[in-house]
Image 1 (tube, rainbow, N blue to C red):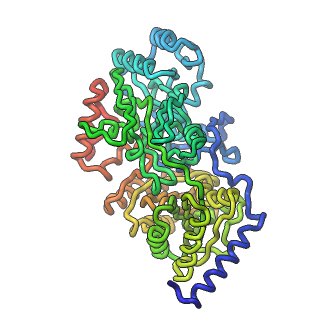
Image 2 (image 1 turned 90 degrees about the horizontal axis):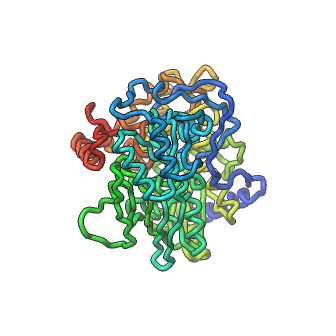
Image 3 (image 1 turned 135 degrees about the vertical axis):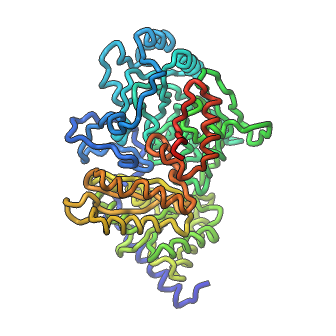
Length: 567
């Protein structure tokens, strides 16, 4: 227990900070957590952007940003001229279009740019929402059943037509859109929720169900979908599983690997793999579904999932506090695990630069009056409001009394919870507000996690690329992320995209992570952006085995997206 003369000032600081936070001037209406449906902007381009291997985008919240200049996206094949179309695959013909239209039975299910001009309609399927990658597909298919997906895949396999599965198209690494003229198979019409058992908590649903809709459905019966993303109003649960999406509360509910009980998938040759188990225990041979979770659609298209949904917490509390060093952040995390235990659902890290950039871009007032080198956001989720609030306040009193935390506030209602979360979730959008952002999603051992941010910032201070005027491409280097998952989001906010900036970052960032036994992709996957860098996180043997798995499931296109020759 802290001594009285240390605890009393801590309590006073907490009360004063909370009083200031309760002032109505703090609450920003726009701070509500974004769940808007993704739409594509077709505004006239103002200038052309060079794609970079990790630039632009946000970590979890795809939103339209009308205040930002709209880039005219170069075709990915032009931005990456080293990528070559595989000549073994043929181009789509009018006969192919007729087959697909006869199969799907609806003109709206086939976006046909082969026999007519449909470039405007196909833009949403060709361009990713970051407006960084752009394919050249001439046809998008929207099946409404697993059987239709199966027949499409068999036809394409037999006729050597390349395909690109697509969910909500909210990915961050270029995997959700074609590179060349691949046929897009979009699962948005496969959007049925089949069953939900509120005793076992098992949901069975089509892959095209929107995450928000799935959460609302189970929420009506006091359960929660075990994944929370800012993109929940757009992303589809099949895509979430295919990319093993992490999200904001992995600390509490774990990953897709632990929550998905079964899947139904269509293999490249059209075979339907029925592994839609609803059992938590099934120890009969290989657990094949795990290959599809995080497989990014490279060995088959997930069409249905069964997933375990936990009971929804009745009491949610959120606190936001300032700290003087990264060492103090680690101490606070240790104490949070010790004192909050089973009710701790999120522990998010933000540095001073990230909060300053968020404030500058959004115009929002930050919860704490004084500036601190680091900030953390804690969320607890339990069943008893009074009990959980007491635990959280006791935790804050302890860490403030021990001078681990300098200052802090606790949200008193839902609006203030949204406002505090906005300070974390708004960082990503703020990072690209002033031009663009080079973005890296990394797993790094906790003791070294923030070292990369310091070294990156120092690197740009020394190379003359970062400064306070428009003469410098780099505006700032910021770090934030999921402390509970050892997941750092390193962002280099820029005034414009610049190949010198990219060259200063890559492959240096990946080399830095590799030397510390980290991962170059914590939760976003490889996609197109990181496929050539996989050797920084996986051994030659691992890559070889992955290629063998790909060849087993998809012998026709044996040449895997994961290339091992350079390693």
